[in-house]
Length: 147
Image (cartoon, rainbow, N blue to C red; front, side, top):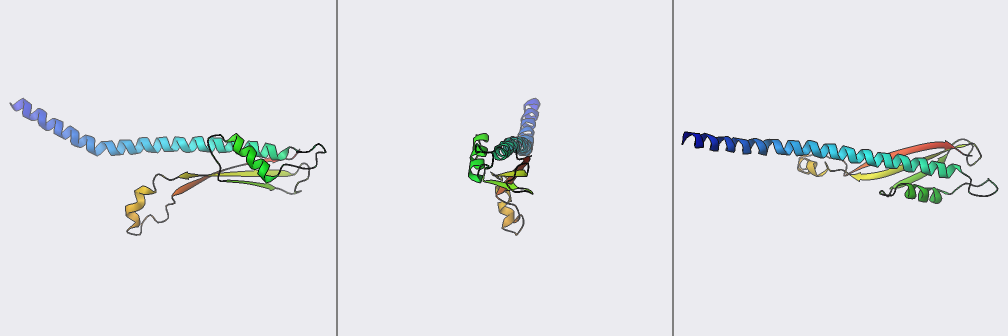
């Protein structure tokens, strides 16, 4: 009988330890997975920005004097980022404007939902965590010289 009683107490302690440790372990695993997702998003945005800049730097006409419009560059970025839909694509020309050999920069942004925003909801009732945004903005830029 004594042995059964100890075994029962030990299993109760194990359940209590599991109840205390499991949320922490799941939180760490969630952070790792979210960090990996942010890495994938950043890599895809980097590729989209490079492709958009490459597209913006190549003349779109036979006389080599006109370059793609911002809408055409945005379409090229959309094609290069198949799993994402960038929230913003901006194209800026450096010194020299649309002249040949002038630099052109493409900036691509994407908004990711912040999973920690909901965790701060109880704290916002007390005035804490009000600066936590519901979205995280990730951006990538690429600059090339016009051909």
